[in-house]
Image (cartoon, rainbow over all chains, first blue to last red; front, side):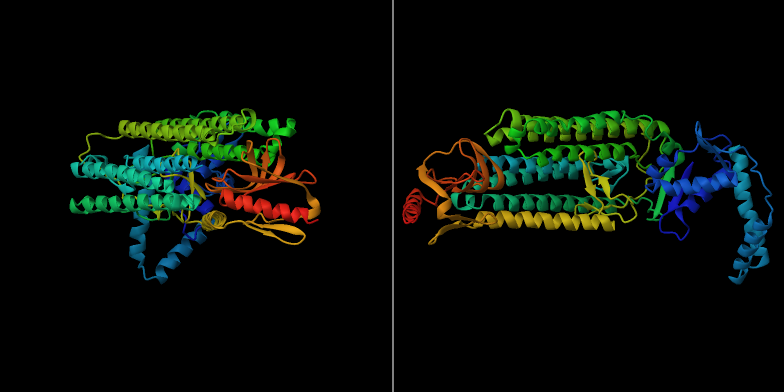
Length: 130
Length: 466
């Protein structure tokens, strides 16, 4: 799987790595049991400090997306990840995104169409890949 | 001495030409730093331009070598070291102009034929393939070899530790230069091992098997470069410490061997990588393959990429060592520091080469005014004074050794530690023996044998006046 890191973005690099791996898992580009490169390998490939990759892996491990052990290194955890998908945090983040779109002038209909489009992109890609 | 300078000059010119010629090869979808698809790189116009570029490189080499013979003209030979530095700078500049000129021609051919490739989406985006990253370090030659070479490079230091008498020929501090260079080779190994080519369409994704083979080629060339450096270092020390070579030309043998080995390794690495890219690419392409316009990161002959976090990056011709990323603040600082250092060296060479010694005989002392190596001799320090027309062999421990003049601290057979202020072409020397052994003697002469005799008489009168 290919990840793209924007070095000039406001989003921290560890967050970008975490987001891309989450996206890769959700779209089926990475499957349960797929090994990830070691912290040093990925840091060397991107050209960043290993601590940054370590922070991203730490986040992913905390969220249950990846599992880490000394023998096999980091690998994608078996899905679905434990936890409530529609928890308070989800509602708050989505509400905020919808609010931001509304104050920028998006209509309810436009928002619905866009959300469905994006949902299809994630779910359908997974179906194609599987 | 002039022959020594000439050989050094020819070596520099040769290396510059070889690296320019290696840069013309199609690699990483570029020729001379200009993005071209594989099919377009075989276009007759491109081939003709590259053939012309090759000829231009050889012309620059021949003209540079021709100019080097200026050093043999007596008037110019007086400033041999300074002229040598100017010729090197001119050669670098002309090579840079030639590369820039042919880059423009290649871009014009691209525009004329409407060879438009996709523009890079974002300069700041770095792509990485997780599958490729996972293979890093698995297919390379073991790093144990480069670490072993680093350990072996300490042999001269150990030798000097157990043979203090040899330290007069060769200070122990200098023996650490080899391990330092070897440590850089260790870093080069790790850099080259994790160096993965980008795909033609700009994605980082390369097939893991391609990455494995690439890693093997890169690690082999880095390991052999480290071996070449070690062999150079041991040969150099062998000639300095054990064989005690008086002929400075012999010192050039390890240098020539090292340069030849590094060029050979770079050539091997490039040809292997080209073969690998050929094998892994689709040969049926008609030139419309979806390659991406790669930004030329080389400005003014130096690597400049603010988005590349590395400070040290492999050269344009990988395998020939490193260069500094001028796009990073630390890189800018390093370039600035190196520039100051080079200017300082040029200044010192010019100052030392252009300035004559001034020997002033005063009432109670003799003052020798020489760039950075002034000396005052008091009358009661002098044991005896004599003349000789032949100097024994010896080494310069700290001083200036130019084509015309040699001055500073020397260690001479039969004399031990001494200060010298001599014009090399005058075979008449005044030897002043001093009390003590550091320095035990001061050896000097003037610009002609007659003037040297006059100076001897003056010093003799001064000494007998006590």
